[in-house]
Length: 381
Image 1 (tube, helix red, strand yellow):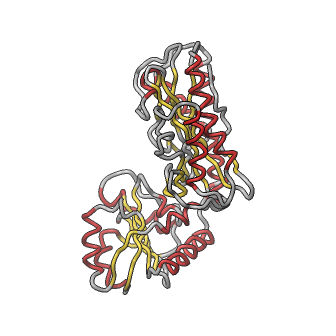
Image 2: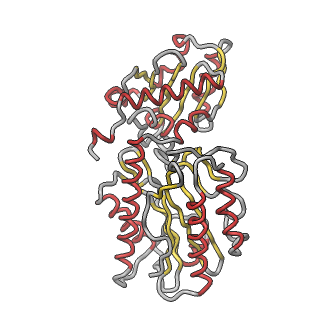
Image 3: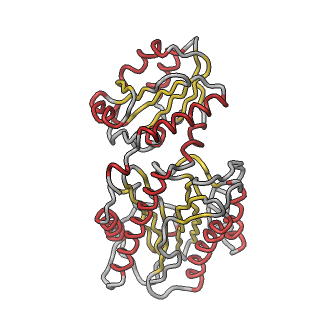
């Protein structure tokens, strides 16, 4: 896919703006303020290819104002305005002027705030004060439902990003087959290099590789521990590609393993397989969670899996590795719809044996589901 094909078009921006304005009307809001930072950029990235850059202060932040009946304005750091103007077809303001610009907005009533949990107090409180008494800020999740359904362009990018994950895991498999010693950090670097060499732009998040006793922890960053025969290895590695992120996980064993270790790998994969088979439009996120959770419980891992304990078995994904909807968890009434994209995951961690995480990226189709990643789920090397 070329840079032109992967870029957000004016038509796609306007489509997303219309979807938001329709949601604003349904919820009784007069405008939406969408906040994003360099780690959670989807609240802005759904409208534009601009993304706050890693750093501190204003460079790491952005805020998009979307009135229900007027053109939007994107607020970014002064030094980022040139880039923002090149990729956003509407007005671009300076983040340091945001609070002073409030009177010019002429807004009244309830204003929705997306990303309220991310906004620093040094920005949020002055903004609230300046809006009073004519308008109030109210946290809202309406943007999360707009983001949940992907456009055809996003779907193509996510398929490619998932294929990059497959490249990374295949490179790990080939390297392990040589019989040379590998540390956890070696495995992470091999996967990351393969994803970048295949066209990735970077990692979607800090790579996790945990071997032996460390694989029985839910998550940890890689160390210089050498992977040994009999180890279970938990990996959680993802690629970033042209504005989207692929969040995937696989586990593997090395050399002779116990029947219990083999069963851990199989149970994790079986739970995700069951979830994939259950997906269809109209199913609730809570009901999908129950399918995966029940497999883990039935296989005897109720005490050794966060997913089995009800902590959730998947999450929305797209521009950010984790997006708010659909969050596959108990009690979430969100109904699955076509072109929603999310992960399905099952983690099993048994002290003294080890653990794995199986995580796949899936799309809801007209009648079922499409898995974007294709690397095998059951790996014994």
